[in-house]
Length: 496
Image 1: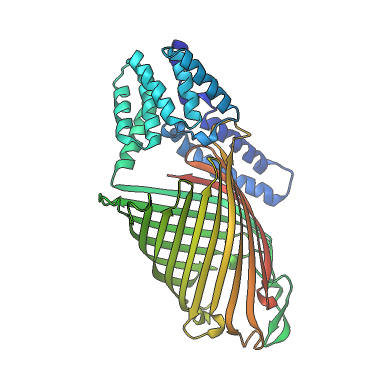
Image 2: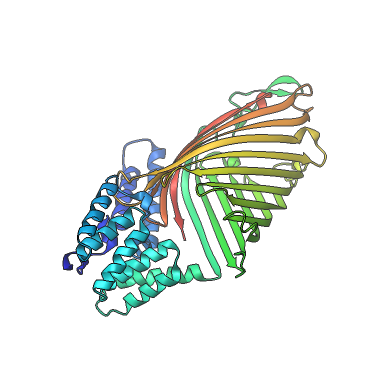
């Protein structure tokens, strides 16, 4: 028993710690940024991400030593875990009172996502020997993962009463208790911050050539308006607040504030900033007919700037519905009404012609094939009606599909799975009338094909590195609006 539960053993210590993984990646970024060879822009990007990563180290080391370190998901299991789990189970059947055997099975059961089996084995250990504070700690962690916070609190508080508990294990228990307190609070804050850099082959989304239509005739654009490649920095933040109303229908008030900004290195006219705010109650309906059906009516406010100049402000309302159709299938549908007001500015003197009303709806079906793989399909529709400009009115239809899966960490040998998300979307636009300035004889139609591939690499439960590649291709009945943009984005996100 001393070999398994000795002073230097902790469940979280069985895998490489966060600091080692993060510093290895930080070393790689700094090598790229500090290299004297290679393109200047690559060295600049490496230096930028090196600085981001270095800033995040002190934010996450304390977390990695605390609550996040012991909450690996069963889907992140090593490839041979099932065979080891089966063998440990057979050994436990043969030796039901052997503490080492019980603890080994509990560890493997936890990694195999059999949390109830792990709990059963650890509780049997306490029946044999009640004086095992680390076992009580692990039981607290497992009940925390199951969402049984009161039971988890009891085990953690009992474990903390042991004077023999090492300081690092005591700190871990205290941080789980703090997280339980946060999750049981009626008022909860959370958020996510992202900072990275992006390359675009067509940052200004301009046409591929200078040949366009003007008053129905061929005209030549200024070269500055033709599609141009550029690098830029990208940042975003999401702040979320949930207030539990304490009712039987599990009603809450959910509020979210989203901010986004990109700053191009050369094409300043392609700088975009936005703020978006939504708030509204969420509550359960049709209880007894479906296991989980929720509705969320909400109000929304937003503002967008282009080239650091006001572009439009918006306000509106909508409703979101979420239905768990089976254990593996969920549908989420959103309908939004939004008034968009475009002010005239010195940069955009005729901007007000775009002012109008937007109606949009989307529905998503997500099916969980197993613990590692999910597929989804999306349908969306949108109608935009201006106040005075019929050739800017349009109807949009879209469909899409995607595949998301996780796989064992191939680099750091951690128990935190990497993720891949592949999606494809197709959109069709139809405008109401021809634009007399562009071509009075041709009504604008266009189609978009959007491809995205995203790889996510977690450093701990809060910090994730991601890299994505995308392609946006638009065909149009008018050459003025056709373009293709290929992009690569990579950066670091931090959840709090």
